[in-house]
Length: 212
Image 1 (cartoon, rainbow, N blue to C red):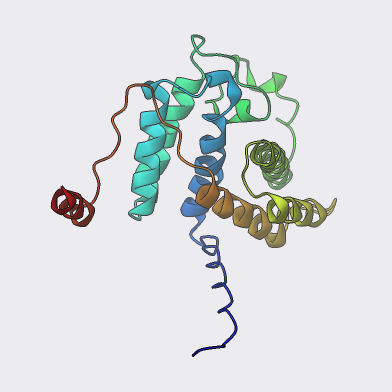
Image 2: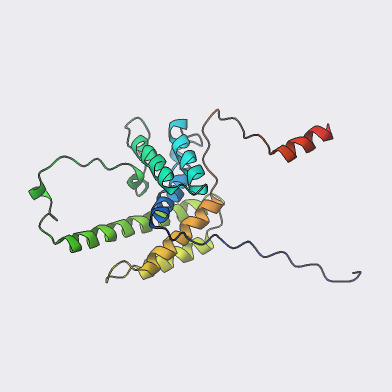
């Protein structure tokens, strides 16, 4: 209508809700920081295909609903990242590598005599603290690489507040998983050197042919 005010911009599409399946949640907590880990400056913008391919496969499988296959692909990436031929990944991203503990008898383990329930609680707490450290480092990286990070910092702050001394609550995991979902949406997948650009969809290809 003539003289009508300009139409306001469409609101941004809401982020995907965090997954509820336990395996999908564990995969998300490896997949999202993996994107950032392979875009760190140590790779000079070109991480090896031996690292990118397992992450790309995990992302494809995760999108298709195959969380188990994605988890297996991330295990392959974790093994690759532990190889000594790559640049040393800074903490906390080093936690994405496969753990190779030194062999030792059970009685050398300081938690060996702790009741199973308490031992499991300590394990979950360490996992939560690692996730919080990964989220903080990923948000710091995003803020320094032209990725919108204001709401990510808010989510990390809420997660840190939820991680109280009494234990790891579902509120903590919900906040962390929300941060990881937004990072997956905003941080592009890393690309390996020499990888050809993906072919355009058929519709775009037909339009380009018609234009010529």
